Amino acid sequence: MHNGPSLRERKKAATRAALAAAAVRITRERGVDAATAEAIAAQAGVSARTFHNYFASREDAIVHHLETLVDTLLDTLEDMPRELDAMTALRKLLLDAASARQHELADLVGALHLVEAHPTAASCNQALLTRTMDRAVRIVADRAGLNGDTHIYPRLALGIASAAFSAAAEVWVRGSPSGRTLTDLVDEAFTRISDGMTAPRTDQNPRPQEPAWPPTSTA
Image (cartoon, rainbow, N blue to C red; front, side, top):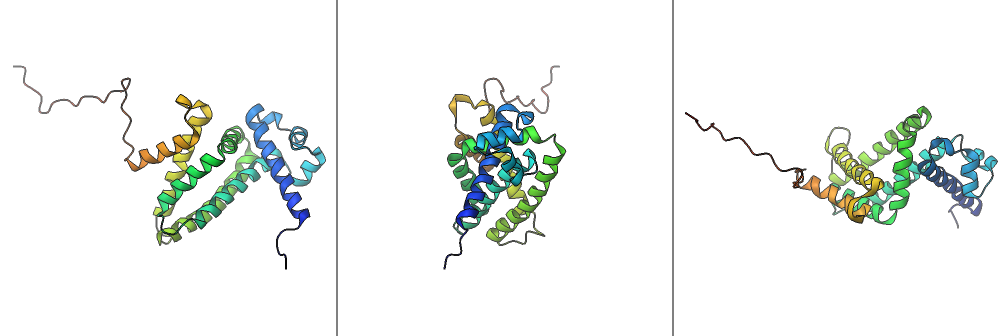
């Protein structure tokens, strides 16, 4: 017996995904105001009426794209080998995502910045973050053998991993130096965290000399 989605359901899901991806792409490339229903539909190869059948607004489409991506990441995290500790699993998850989907992720980072000031998008995004964070905490807590409601570690691990990825994505979207890939930058971010976040030393930013103590007498 076939219990999977029907052909009609698969086509509807594909159309929804195409519209959401188009909304993100247009928002990043041309700005929020350019992401009209007509423009999004045209890029996805459907009518504006079709867009409105799936989404109430461009913000809904962008948040749907984010939701799909996050759910896919959490599914992957949940299925990772149990012998990996939580931080190792999170690092591998985000490195693999950066390698396989870096252009999609860059579109998403850019679009989210552009819609932050829009109340509708901010409200939808906050609801999504609450829901996905609850699931993510459960996954990390289960991997670590902890109670996610009472132990700080799962939320702290997720916060650190999220910050590492966000920092890497920001640098990459703005134009990483020496042609470094998003994967390179994500790997560096996690390495710096594991090394205790020691600030990098450069010729332009030398480590200040500590004053001698006790001071040498000039008398």
